[in-house]
Length: 235
Image (cartoon, rainbow, N blue to C red; front, side, top):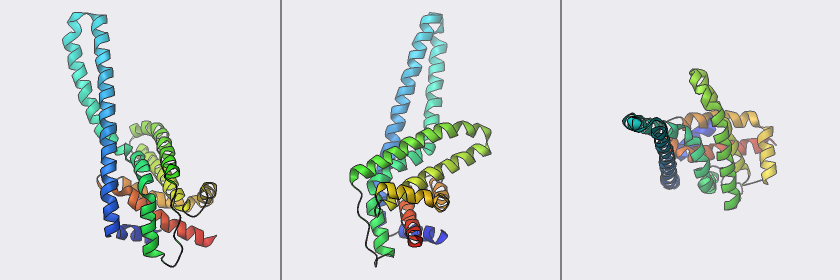
């Protein structure tokens, strides 16, 4: 597993990977900024509605206190979105990764497995649908896991394990689907879930590093190409 991770890290500095990295980072940043702005506008609008309702209920004397409260809420919401973007990163990478998986996988296969036939590119709709499904599942899991962050260390551990499970699931299946039908790729993951999850822990560690985690789709996909090759060789 460590050998596979080292291979994935080493290849990230190659010219083909650098080109993909620039596009991947650009798309991830655009998505994060867009989501952040949309959430901020929505929450500020809701706070404004609450301010209007409170003034109507309490009278004109409540105007100044309500303005102060709304201003404070706006600042808190802004800071919360900045912090929340860190937790949204696995969700964003699930979407971003779907656009570049085949390009990344093909580079890995050419570099390390030139004597083996390369996998077939996934239909764009299949890759995107799988990415969206994983992103939606990630949101559900994180909504369940986030409350545990209130309990300090155990919350961080739960969140880390959730990220490892989700990211390992997505990227292994995307790597496997280049060689197998969707159902067979999912079955292969379940049969080797221990190995896949162990690789997911490495991906979760990668995604937990700010700024560096923008390259998660490249590292995760490259790693899972190696993991799939190892698993397939045993079957």
